[in-house]
Image 1 (cartoon, helix red, strand yellow):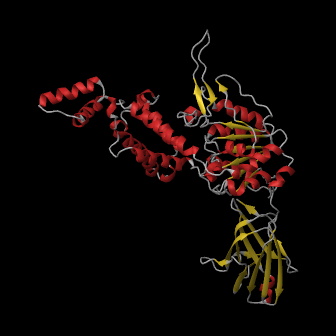
Image 2 (cartoon, helix red, strand yellow):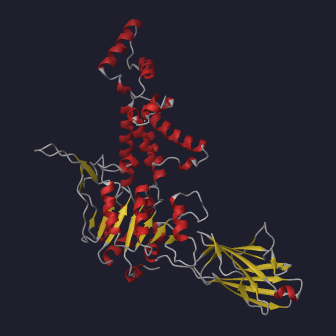
Length: 532
């Protein structure tokens, strides 16, 4: 695929960016960002710091919880789940489930900031009183602090809320610093060119807070409508000018909250404004966690609704680096797809799951409904297994299309006891092809089994577990696989059959071929190949 082919398209596209879209700019994914934030707190706090102890406790508890239930501990924590947990624990006494919780884990309330009480006037008076009674002084009050904290903590369950708040502020400050430090963004330039070439411009929704796409547009001299001005209760509106309209669904590093003063007879109305001075915007307007994302006093629902309206004019949605983990975003995609069966989607994701992986949530549903093979219907999902830097142009130019059926053309040449079968891949690249002599019966007798079998292909390897089975890797469109077999008799050679299992990365295609009764021409045994 070439960038020039972007201009040749007749369909209208919209684009959705997830965290994977920024990874090629050197920015971490959400779980990697959580680790970096933990390391950032450790680099600025002493080991005895209550803040460091608290964040380690939270991170470790979340990992252990996942591991104890047989889940993947490496995927247990991302930046959103970590900060959501911190906010919940900070306000745990006000949570709707609080009446039903007899007691939290000890670590939840074990760590307290010394400043919570020791720096206060009552705290200093208590330390001085203890010292006077014992006839000694406590310059730093640490011993007395520990004793009193233990006593008070046993009666006050949630007296460390300020430490949770301090931890959240420290994490968000670190996150801002990490996400502002992006690298080269030239790989995003196909989006800028598409915005200029597509009639009416391009609508892009991003779930990221970073400024990578804005940087790519600035480098190209293209204006961006980043929908930075938002006010509670005001419907989002946009026009076709400028050509690139960017919907930052979860906020942005260059946005800040605005709380106007009371004036006249109107009530305060929260809003967002753009703050170009990134060196001073230490509390950017970003939305983290489902509770905040779905809140009525934030920008998410308004901006998502604005993007959904623009999406209605599009034929295809290109999704880059999004794991489909946000239910409110998935709902918009589902409704858009279901309203018109001609609409389709391309996903750019190097780790997209196979069709037969049944534990992948909504991605599995997409595979089964839109990608799984059906001769009577065109596929509605195209998967490009690559990073944004490797496959963005391909994702923008390739729409879903049906693969040929059957997938292979097959010819057999019979000479005495020898049979040479040539298979040609008629479709797109196959990650892996297994060819073998089939077991079973043909009419009233079993298939003849060859004495020897070899496969001529540079990547072919015999399967160590199955006799007369060979594995061929990376079979491109038009590639030939030659299979040579020797049988016990001429009659057996004329009855040659071959099983082919081809893996295209998303699903498995099975075709079983045999020679005709009167000739050596190969034919497909069943009316269709089977895919699952």
